[in-house]
Image 1: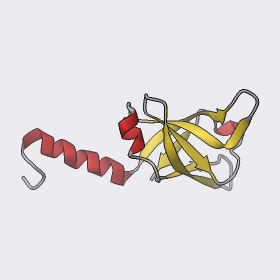
Image 2 (image 1 turned 90 degrees about the horizontal axis):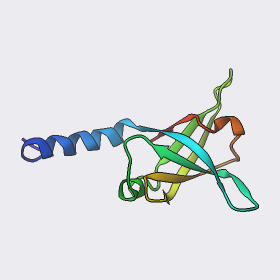
Image 3 (image 1 turned 60 degrees about the vertical axis):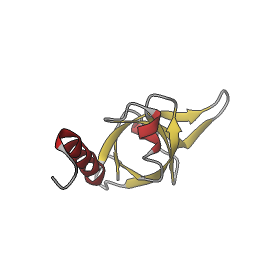
Image 4 (image 1 turned 90 degrees about the vertical axis):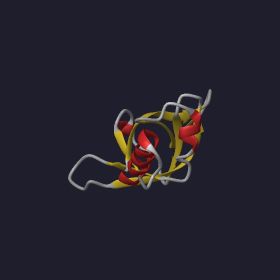
Length: 109
């Protein structure tokens, strides 16, 4: 095998392909403090990422949310950091996100 021996080599190959193919996540909430809400900073839970180490490997990747409607406008952002210890990430978008984006799916490229 070109990628190692046995099962570990196959797992390494599949892991690499998953990141090439693109990942999906769900917008959980805005980043907020006691008195403020930052509408362009969002917390996202990524499918298949369950710890801080994996979430940190996504820093710098592009995130795209497609708005519903006829225009299909795409709002893009960039992964800034991991958020917490359970694999969530913090994404900074170019513009503020509408409230209807909460709970919706995003693509991570």
